[in-house]
Length: 74
Image (cartoon, rainbow, N blue to C red; front, side, top):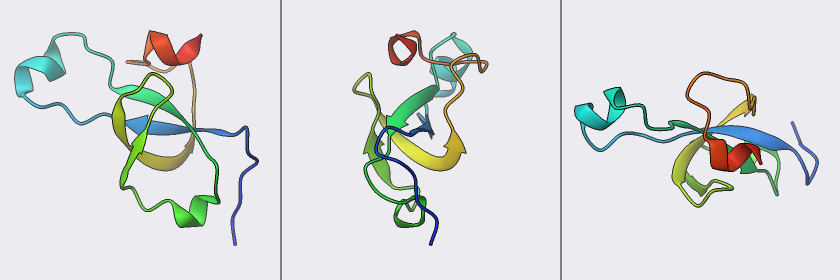
Protein backbone atom coordinates (compact mmCIF):
# COMPACT_ATOMS: atom_id res chain seq x y z
CA UNK A 1 0.00 0.00 0.00
CA UNK A 2 1.37 3.40 -1.01
CA UNK A 3 0.45 6.26 1.28
CA UNK A 4 1.06 9.96 1.55
CA UNK A 5 1.09 12.25 4.54
CA UNK A 6 -1.91 14.46 5.25
CA UNK A 7 0.04 17.50 4.06
CA UNK A 8 1.28 15.98 0.78
CA UNK A 9 0.40 17.93 -2.34
CA UNK A 10 -0.23 15.95 -5.50
CA UNK A 11 -0.53 17.11 -9.08
CA UNK A 12 -3.97 17.60 -10.60
CA UNK A 13 -4.68 18.21 -14.27
CA UNK A 14 -7.57 20.42 -15.32
CA UNK A 15 -9.00 19.23 -18.59
CA UNK A 16 -9.86 22.14 -20.90
CA UNK A 17 -13.44 22.54 -22.03
CA UNK A 18 -12.38 23.76 -25.46
CA UNK A 19 -9.20 23.78 -27.57
CA UNK A 20 -9.13 27.60 -27.45
CA UNK A 21 -8.81 27.55 -23.65
CA UNK A 22 -5.93 25.07 -23.88
CA UNK A 23 -3.92 27.52 -25.98
CA UNK A 24 -5.00 30.72 -24.22
CA UNK A 25 -2.58 30.53 -21.31
CA UNK A 26 -4.98 29.12 -18.72
CA UNK A 27 -3.55 27.21 -15.77
CA UNK A 28 -3.87 23.47 -16.27
CA UNK A 29 -1.67 22.07 -13.48
CA UNK A 30 -3.03 22.37 -9.95
CA UNK A 31 -2.18 21.30 -6.39
CA UNK A 32 -4.41 18.76 -4.65
CA UNK A 33 -4.03 18.08 -0.92
CA UNK A 34 -4.02 14.32 -0.35
CA UNK A 35 -6.11 13.22 2.61
CA UNK A 36 -5.86 9.52 1.78
CA UNK A 37 -3.37 7.10 0.25
CA UNK A 38 -2.26 7.43 -3.37
CA UNK A 39 -3.58 3.91 -4.03
CA UNK A 40 -7.09 5.21 -3.21
CA UNK A 41 -6.88 8.01 -5.80
CA UNK A 42 -8.12 6.67 -9.12
CA UNK A 43 -7.78 9.73 -11.35
CA UNK A 44 -11.35 10.77 -10.66
CA UNK A 45 -12.40 14.35 -10.00
CA UNK A 46 -10.89 16.03 -6.95
CA UNK A 47 -10.92 19.62 -5.71
CA UNK A 48 -7.66 21.56 -6.13
CA UNK A 49 -6.47 24.12 -3.57
CA UNK A 50 -7.78 26.92 -5.80
CA UNK A 51 -11.21 25.30 -6.18
CA UNK A 52 -10.75 23.88 -9.68
CA UNK A 53 -12.09 20.39 -10.34
CA UNK A 54 -9.16 18.29 -11.55
CA UNK A 55 -8.10 14.72 -12.28
CA UNK A 56 -5.49 13.89 -9.64
CA UNK A 57 -2.36 11.83 -10.29
CA UNK A 58 0.21 10.24 -8.02
CA UNK A 59 2.88 12.77 -9.11
CA UNK A 60 4.02 15.37 -6.59
CA UNK A 61 2.96 19.01 -7.06
CA UNK A 62 5.69 21.22 -8.50
CA UNK A 63 4.82 24.93 -8.21
CA UNK A 64 7.49 25.73 -10.80
CA UNK A 65 6.00 23.46 -13.47
CA UNK A 66 4.90 24.90 -16.79
CA UNK A 67 1.23 25.87 -16.61
CA UNK A 68 1.16 25.78 -12.80
CA UNK A 69 -1.80 27.56 -11.24
CA UNK A 70 -0.66 30.74 -9.45
CA UNK A 71 -3.52 30.44 -6.94
CA UNK A 72 -2.31 26.98 -5.90
CA UNK A 73 1.27 28.17 -5.30
CA UNK A 74 0.55 30.72 -2.63
